[in-house]
Amino acid sequence: MGLSAPASVNSSPGWKSSSLFVQSGASSTCATLRGSMASSKRKCAQKKVSVTCSSSSSSSDPLLVKAARGEPVSRPPAWMMRQAGRYMAVYRKLAEKYPSFRDRSETTDLIVEISLQPWEAFRPDGVIIFSDILTPLPAFGVPFDIEDIRGPVIQSPIVSEEGLKTLHPIDLDKLQFVGESLKILRQEVGGHAAVLGFVGAPWTIATYIVEGGSTSTYTTIKSMCHTAPHVLRALLSHLTQAISDYIVFQVEAGAHCIQIFDSWGGQLPPSMWDSWSKPYIQEIVSSVRKRCPKTPLVLYINGNGGLLERMKGTGVDVIGLDWTVDMADGRKRLGSEISVQGNVDPAYLFSPLPSLTEEILRVVRSAGPRGHILNLGHGVLVRTPEESVRHFFEVARSLNYDTFLQTQTPTEGIGSLVI
Image (cartoon, rainbow, N blue to C red; front, side, top):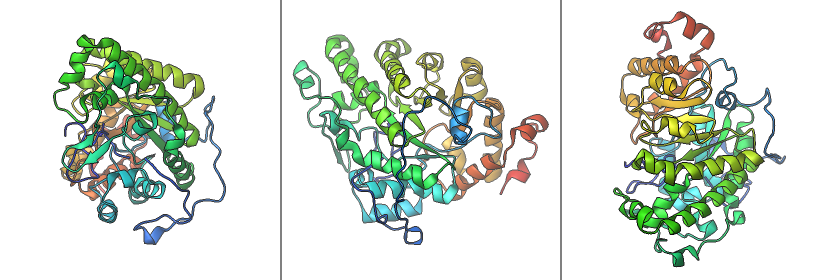
């Protein structure tokens, strides 16, 4: 989902990823994290964290979780999509040592190290696991490769009933690197930040499985809606069950919150999204709610301006707005009973810091004092200055709703917030 086609990744120079973040997993609970962080070698905690799907909220929940649930908070929590990745010098150095993206995203100690790089540098309120929305595919019968130029490649696309026979229930034992990474991340950040997991929505995952990889036209899968709807619905139903189980697996391993990326849902006309994406997301939400009723679920679609009200109908807790939607308009359309996330244009991180500060304040003011998670409207762009990312989080931490929303006009106080 990666989310340039909305999915370019910050982790590998020559291809576009399937996921808006790129962040997840591997194979060992380390004695010492392997890699380049010599100054902060960490031993995995001896004490195991026992996490189950909670049925109640707690006063000790991280700020981000409280905001996602619409509970009162003192300031907007902040994190960034693609906050771990190629814009960070420490990541580029590690990627030189481990050039395979699959290795970086499917090896526990590398996942943990990469996931914690922005945490150690900027202290965001959310730490997202370094992974990809395609990571679970082999666990339910869809192997894939990543090529330098083409990106993700599925050698045997599923376009017929015969292809459906290769699918099987998700084998979570094959995803232990994800579970182990989340457990370690939960230990590392303690209660100071929320640990975030993520998945791709069924429609978005299906685009890769049907098209055989990335596409700019989606002609094969869109035509299947009319030429082989029974095959496509069977595929989407299988993905729905697998993704639901994968979400619960991540929560039980330590994720406080899960983001669902329907990265390519915005490529559908709204009426087709109603038929081919929304019902399956609704089913995921319903299934997860039964097992993990208090785990906040976030839904993000790139290019979602025409879908906001429909997204609300899925039953998720938080709607992520991309940067093309005005926050004030989005809040008006969605109402105050659902939380929102976003939506600073990632290009603002290339602007002078006072301009970035002003835009952050505008977004926060427009979102209001309850139910807002500050984020970008898309992932961090390649070559984004780390100084700007640091400033983004410093401004977020400096805010206090009691004083900011009551005493400032949109441009007041900006100078004092420029660090």
